Length: 129
Image (cartoon, rainbow, N blue to C red; front, top):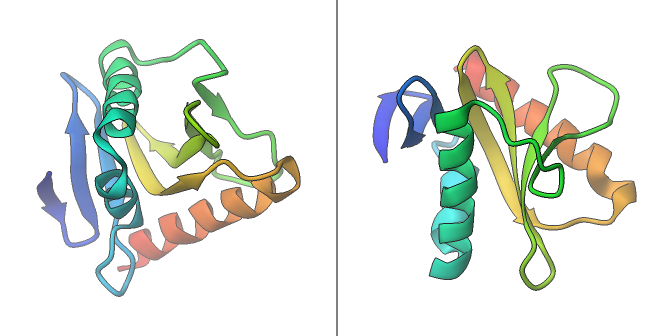
């Protein structure tokens, strides 16, 4: 991981795209903390998905990566790892880069909109710093 600026932390880099973690006003980067806390097998699955997106510019399999179908902007996307209870990493695209906001275990469908709103709130806090 490398410092990008005060509110962004570079988590992964491709040739022309990056995954950046958004820092909250308290200095925490929930996306980095989430990924760091995972067991190595799960970390490797997320890294493989992220690297595919950064190198190819897309992941067509919606079982692995999808835009959340919830109202509001900006659009929120989730990386999905299907091990155990399932794990998610939420992100928002800005130009060529992706800003990871937070992650956690898979939530029930009725809670997906709340995760999207949380991602947008973290994203906006990062922009305001």
